[in-house]
Image (cartoon, rainbow, N blue to C red; front, side, top):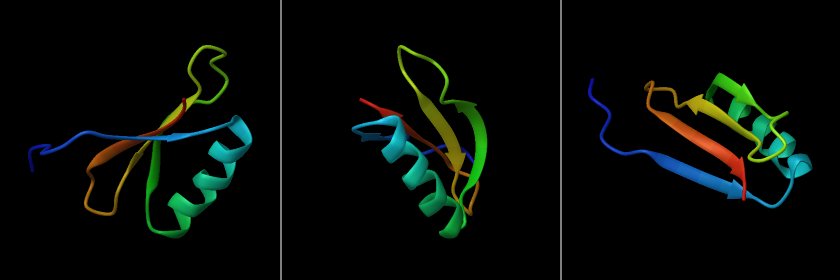
Length: 59
């Protein structure tokens, strides 16, 4: 299945990124890549239940 859209969601802090991580997992998302320790742009890449990627990042 080809990717149709790339979605980036921003949060205000690493703490909020951790809260949203739990929410994503509860909703069926899977963590694909973790860059939460990056001091310049902490982020995590997920896949939704259908496998489409999206990012949650501090911005």
